[in-house]
Every structure is written in C-alpha cells, then in structure tokens.
Amino acid sequence: MDPLQHAVEEASKSPPKKARDKKREALKAKQANRKFKGASAPDPSLGISLEDFTSFTETLKTSKRIFALLGAGLSAGSGLVTFRGSDRLWRGIEPQDLSDPQAFFDDPAKVWWFFSDRMKRAQEAKPNSAHVALVKLAEHKEGFFAVNQNIDGLCERAGFPPSQIAQIHGTLFKIKCSKHSAEKDKCDYVTEATYPVNESLTIPYDVDISDAAAPLPDVGVNDLPRCPKCDNLLRPAVVFFGEATPLSITERTYNFTSNGPIDIMLVIGTSAVVLPAAMYIPVARNAGAKVAFFNMEESDEGLATAWPGDWMFKGDAAATVADMLKGVVGNVGGRGGMN
Ligand SMILES: [Zn+2]
Image (cartoon, rainbow, N blue to C red; front, side):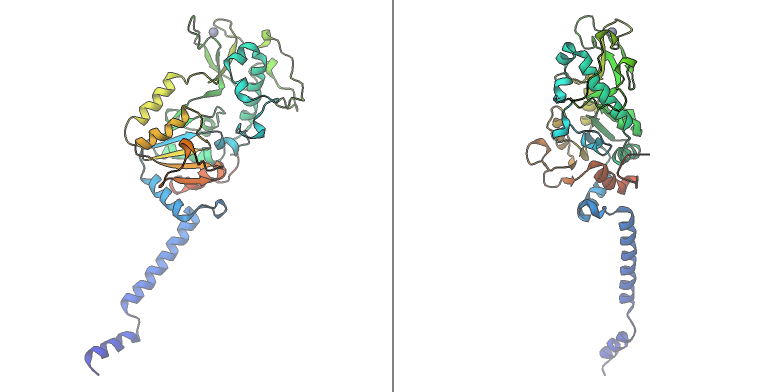
C-alpha cells in the first residue's frame, strides 16, 4: 500500500476534524434557527415570507431616518370604522359632507352630533398592538417621524412622543373657536376636550345615533359649546374637507423630509389617495427611501403602488405591523386592543 492510500484509509476510520466541525456548525445553525423562529420569524398565519420578513427587519434595524404615513386602517383593529365600504355612512350621510365648513355653518348641531359620536367611539376604543409597536419604534429610533391622518387620539394614548408625530388632520380631542380660521377678527381659542363636550351633547344611553332610524336628540344652537373669549360657536379642532393643514404641521413634516436621506418609509392603513398625504410617498422615494406597505389591499395604481424592492404586507395592520416590527422592538403581544 502506498503511503498516500494508507493515509486516506486511516482518515476514513474516524471522522475527520473537518466533518466534525461541519456537524457542530449544522447543530449551531439549527439552534440559531430555532431561536430566530421563536423570536423573529413571521407569524405563519399572516402569510408573509421569511425572506420578506428578514429583508425588512434587516433594513429597519440599520435605518436611521424612518418616515411613516398612518391612516384609518391602523385603527381598524381597535374597532373604529375606516370610512371605506358600506360602514362609512353616518345616518346615511357621507362623512365628508359632515366634516365640512359649510355643513357646520348650515347645521352646527348635526355636525356636533357626528363628531360627538366619533369622540365617544374613539374614547372607548383602545390602542392596538400596531400603535404600541410604533411607539416602541419611536423610542428606539429618534430619527423616526410619523404623519398621522387619524384624529382618534390612539397614537397619543399609546404614548407616541409628540415631537415625532404630526397630526395633519387635527384631533377629536381638541376643540377650537369657529372663528379660528377666519381672515378677519380671527380668534385663536383652542382647548383640550373629552366626550361629552357638554351635557347637551350627551348621546342617550344605548342609542346608536349613527343609525338614521334612531332619533337624533334635539339640541338648540344655544346649547352648543361657545368660545369663552368671543362667544362664537366652538367646533372640533379637526381639519374639515377643503381646509388646509395648519402651516406649523406642514412645516414640521417638511423639516423632516428635507433634512437628509430617508432610509425607509412605512405606509400603514392608508390607500394614500388623499392629497397632500399621498404626496409623501414620492417625497420619501426621492429622499432614497424603500417603502413598506401595510394594507388590506394591494394598490395597483397611483402613488401607493409597490415598486420592485418595496415590501407589501397584506392584512390587518394591527397584526402585520406588530409582527413585522418585532425584530426591532420585540414582541408587544396580541393583535387586539391594549388592556
Ligand atoms: Zn373665539
């Protein structure tokens, strides 16, 4: 037997060192994989691929400047209506016809009932796991800034740092003088509010006033809340349809988007068809952002269309957002309302 063959035979008797190392490596990988699956693989019920989960998580981890656009779908998991589909009507009326300066001028009591109803529902709702995960992301990443189209106050109640969020449509939980946006003799009175704004605007127990069949309580214009400074009617401090977003809010958003490259944009629970909010997607792309969409439906037209390299996470945002963010912020628990 020549020495070379002898060496080969000897080597084959006991597992060579290399093979043992390989085995150990495989075991290590298996353990790591198990750990990874336990803490940070997507929930199988969401139908999201491990590849998408991993690439999104890795990008989010290394991202310094993160931009988000939040819409009604974020709060759907908290039981609030999204104003799409058949449940959007209030007493058979389109919400935009009630959230309207002319409607307030014509029938302030009806507009106040509409907003009182929304205040009550929002006040009774609880932030869901997506709100909580986003708050944790804001705490982890000081370069995270969100534009919130929701007026339900759930982001604030979940603890979103005020400096990192812009309420571009205002909030149900503030009221202001109806002469606030007047050009002449403008009154700047604004104050915080909770449901009911006053005793006259209390919805009768067990009555669903969003149903046109239920009688709307009679309330005179003199019973509506009045400005303590100028005695004009107070109104919800929300941006009515056709009104401009307050300049200070627009400026804060501009300051973020123009202050350097954006690594990633999260578009959550919004079809992004309403301007100017929809414009933030191309603004972020121009600043270098890849976009992650968290929506019930995939859009195939307009600004909310996913580009190659983007992520599309379909489903209830309360579930998908919390699950996709857990690689960075940890597990925030269930899908539903926070207790
Ligand atoms: Zn006033």
